Length: 294
Image (cartoon, rainbow, N blue to C red):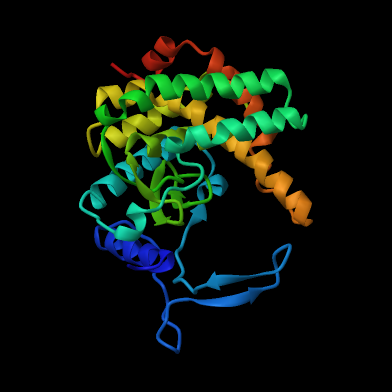
């Protein structure tokens, strides 16, 4: 069985061969594609697997600026990734279940109660998290076999997609980071993208609510999105946000104990609670109409 780095390299090669630009590992002088190295520029320093990747042009999605064209292009990229990996099979990835994957919601319930007991969150936030997770477990996980399954990237966020923009034209020039990829429900990739795009916008206005519509339209321009999958996107977005909020606080707690920097993992906290409240109070049928979900 291949290790995780080798599995990522195989996936990148397979996806690249299908026309999606992604970086290629540069082979070391000893013939390997990676090695454990002392990394001194992180806090705290650590010994980590390090590899050198080929350069990809373009700017991160968060640097390009958001627009309907960008959301549409991202949705189309997600569909292209699903088409490219439709027959991808890898034993290492079969055994990989990231901590933040939506199938692991039960793992977070004890953590949430611990955060309440330590006064990291209050009762209102605890209830907001647990109610969303419980609803997701009842409405989605209890019937997960009805949803379309396959291989997902799992982290289509504002830093993992490279773009070049010329006027209204948007071209994808790179897809990064296959560390969280795994086999799961395909709709979860759209869920992650909708969530990250909503979190990165600084205002919750009418245009904010159309983000999902543009992403779904881009996806459907390449492949069909089953109706039952589309109808559960909002619920899954809420739940994925719950996991991100709880995970961020957990990681910050552990890093603080070790004396490390936790600014990145707390990024979601800045507006995540406000977004979760808005999503929890949203009329699901109304959102479905805005997203043109039949």
